[in-house]
Image 1 (cartoon, rainbow, N blue to C red):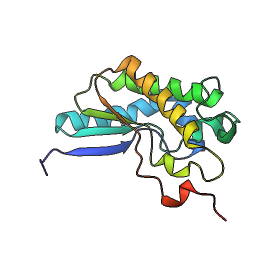
Image 2 (cartoon, helix red, strand yellow):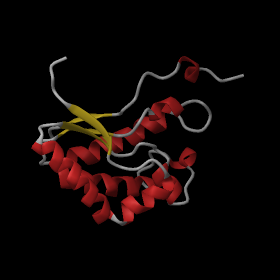
Image 3 (spheres, rainbow, N blue to C red):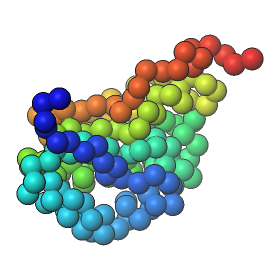
Length: 157
C-alpha cells in the first residue's frame, strides 16, 4: 500500500540434498546471492532473507532425527544451522537491501502433530535469533510462520 518494493526470498534451499551444496560450497551460494543483493540495492528493493525454508534439513544432513534434537544447541544440525546463519548474516548485514532475517516457511505448522513440539521449535527460533543478533543488532527477525492450524492443538484421532 505504501509502494515499498519487497521480496521475500529463500536465501537457503528447500531440500536436504541441496543443503549440502549451500553449506559446503558457500562461495557458489554467495555468488548467486551477491547478484540478487546487488540487483536489489541498485533498484531499491528490500529483501526478507529466509535462511532455512525447512527446519529439518540441517539435522537430516548430519544424520540426526529432528524429532530427537530440534533446538538442542549441542546437536550437529543446530551447529550447522548456526554456522550457515553466521555466514549469511555476516556477508549481507551491511546491505541496505536486507530488511529482515527470517527463519523459514511456516515451520510451526508441524509442531504438536506427533514428531516435534512447539517448545522445540521455540528453542530453535531462539538459537536463530541469538545467532543473528550477535552479528546484526538492528534488522527485524521473524519466524515466517502463520497461525498454527486449529487441529495442531489436539491429538488427531
